[in-house]
Every structure is written in C-alpha cells, then in structure tokens.
Length: 112
Length: 115
Image (cartoon, rainbow over all chains, first blue to last red; front, top):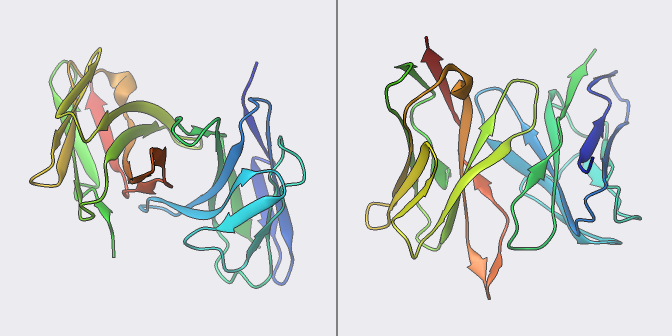
C-alpha cells in the first residue's frame, strides 16, 4: 500500500540532545513537508522540499534542520537549539503543487 | 497574526442533526480553501475543498460554503454521525501562476457528535 510512514510513533529527547524524526513515502510525490502541532493550535510549517536536494524554511524553522537526499525520504532533526520541542510532528507530501496534501500518522516528541 | 481563524474550539451536536463549522480568513489573496479531518494521534485527512470561483462545493454529507465578501467559509455535515467526531482544520492558500502556495491552517474545531 502506498503511503507516508513516520517513525518512531513516540520519541523522548534529553536536554541538549539532537533527535531525528523519520519520514518515508512511497507515493512518488515530489513535495514533502514537516508540520508541528501543539495542543489547541493549528499546524505550523517547519520546512518543506519541492524537489530532491532542495528545501526551504517554513514559518518556524529555527532549531530544526532537514535533508532531502532521496525523493522518498525527508528526515527532520530537532536540534538542541529548539528550546520547546515537545509537540506532535506531522510529515506530509503531495504529488504536484496543485494536489492535495497527504499526511503521515505523526510522531509525538517529548522532553525528559 | 492569524490569517485563518477558527473561533470555536469545540462543537457538540446530536447524531442526525447538522454540524456547522466556521472559518474566517484575513488575507484577501487566498483563493483556495480546504478542510481536513483529524483523529487523535493520527495525521489529518483531506475532506473537501473549494476554489474562490465557486461559492459552494458538495461531496456526500459534506458541503463547504464560501462567502468571499465576508472572508468566511463554513463546513456543513448533514446528517452528523458519531464517526464524524474529530478535529476539523480549515486551511487556505494562494495560487501563484496557477500553482498552490503553502497551506495556512486554522487552530481547529473539535466536533463531538453524541448518539
């Protein structure tokens, strides 16, 4: 089945630690996105990539980094510079610019 | 400053009745609007969309209405079912040269449909 796989489902970060969230899609979509959801808040865009080896900052990119070395993969690293990392992280993709966004099932990141 | 506002954090409706979820926007350049549905601990799923050239779009039990002059859209669910209980996000975007920009999401409205 085609889809977007995010792993792990739950992740715990220690103070000062970098952690990487995985996002893999087998939908052959060109564009991939990372969103953050906080309780009672909407989805806020962290980073996005419209093509391999290229990505752009979203609205809240500080403290995060990404790479897009393969079309299928768009990992997100939450660095120690992100002072409030606890949130639900959603990866999404779409085939073309005018297509609908498909979301993964999310990763809940918490700070120990 | 929020460009997409969903002013009702929650809504409770009886099964079989109509659910009306509202969304307001401030950016007059927005020309494409979407509704997503989200269950807890899952990713949102696309529900229905509408282009600014229309004022209504219908898909089964779901209808979206757009009032451009008021910068307001609403999602109607008729009849409401317990399985519709979820958080509903309104999203908007601007099309540049025929291509959609990034989506701007509202904060969501939690719908509870009681049996």
